[in-house]
Image 1 (cartoon, helix red, strand yellow):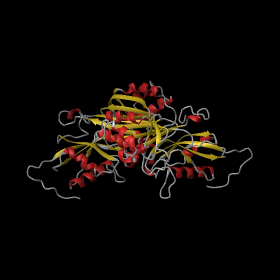
Image 2 (cartoon, each protein chain N blue to C red; image 1 turned 90 degrees about the vertical axis):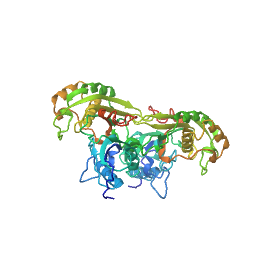
Image 3 (cartoon, chains in turn brown, blue; image 1 turned 180 degrees about the vertical axis):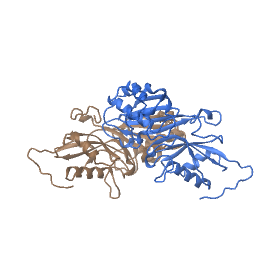
Image 4 (tube, rainbow over the protein chains, first blue to last red; image 1 turned 135 degrees about the vertical axis):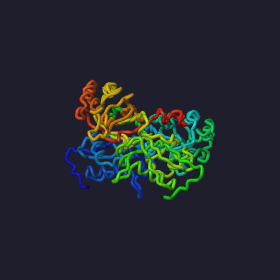
Length: 276
Length: 276
């Protein structure tokens, strides 16, 4: 339904932030595409229908086709009366079941999710066992050959801190600088209902290059196989050459866990620390 | 492909056991139905195609429509040369992605999965938080109102041991006796990637009546809400009346974790203790 929302006297626009979770399986990524359904296009359509006026969101992370999220961030402006906190509920009753808003907040009107410093956390999940598990098929990468998690963990510290991650960046990047800072990187096992085992690679940083986490994961998998030694990570980084690092692991194993914006602390009501 | 398998001299039939995992979302349960696809019909069709002769499996647990499994059990007889351990691989390359064999074993030719004493373990998963998570939508029950897990856990011991579970049995049962023994019952929280929280109810017993685990789960949910006190479980059991217990929780939250057959110990090669 479209229409012109009358601006009543005293009615002001507000900027609303959505924390968005989605199963990326059936989407061509976040960003609007000509040739397929995307998270952004579903959000735009649903918001526009809900408020009766054309709305376009600004997204924090333009996740690739097949990549999932627990807490991506999108903002939009509206002068609707509906309180920001209620918008999550209104949207969820209209969204397809594979997209769910986790929270909605009012944020400062000049808050831009890609231009504000943030800390992003991703998780890459590897199902490392003899046979696939149907319950894990959508959001993990099935890898049969046994991986040495100890070696994978031993390789992690080489990536901590500020580095030029050019070796771990797709050649198709549009980034001006390939220098980034990783705050933490861990590879750990998780038992699944006694039916072992998932290996979860969790990484937190100030920004990630195109395919960076998937290349890190693909490289750590090779470390787990013994193809590389943990100390080879140093040489790989120094090479500043995509050919020096390992393969890009499949999109389905990757989930954007969440984003934190330290500058929003004190500016929004976030007792569960979803964003701050 | 059907055909007559020639019995070569020296060729004997063997009984093969399959440990079967499935996402029950797109199936009308385990048992062959006229009006929909079932796990059993997919297995029969795939086995018959693989071995070129009509094969019908005997299943251990006839799970309901929408119920999942990590380790249901099915047996069939074949005089194919293929070693029993290899059959899992051959099947998995032919099965739809929501059904996966976890292991295949040769078992004694008189082993019947429903007539041999076994210990079954089920898990009921409740997603107890404000908003749904797309990643958990297929195999958990979304329940928004806050549940007191401490109270739910306090109710569990009342069910341990041998009891007449008639109050926790669907009125549509065909069972002669409603007496069963529960070996363990626990309700515990699980964090999901810092996005809390799943409540998992895990129960192990010598057999379960029609809808018994779902009625236990639905009742424990009411305990978690404060509708019932933990000690009310005693009265409910003694009533031997379905009306005395709580509601039947939805099928999608239920997973058959596995089955153990103590009598098979020493008779099959099961180092990972999937079955023994």
